[in-house]
Length: 145
Image (cartoon, rainbow, N blue to C red; front, side, top):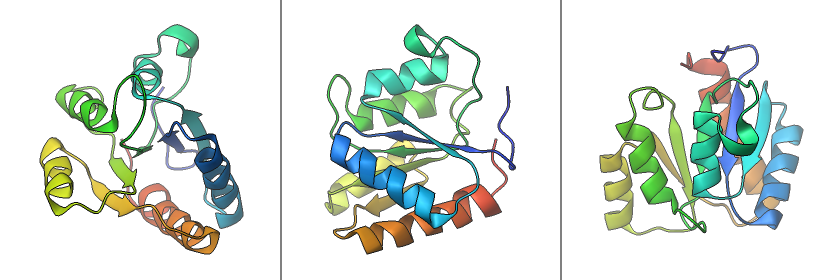
């Protein structure tokens, strides 16, 4: 199935349950069109994209991926490199969402193919605004693959 502008999927890869709860709450409050789905680590994200394992049922590919860097099993940087090296998944926009502010790391992530880099906000109000902006740009404005 291909993604549509009317029902895009925001796929969030984050291993922290509290962060996932806050992201879901901010997504729901923001009024973003589409759905939010979660995976808990890099291997689970790759399985979702490949539709293997617990993700073997039919589902559409995400319109955008929100990717945490520090995850177990396979970190975000490695996952980003694999996504962008795969001709099927390469067009999916990847927004890195991290606590890191290292200019060297940010440059490396863009070199690997990140479409955006956002520093995780410190308050729910800031998170809500970030989610609104992600929704407005990536899910309402941009034509997704």
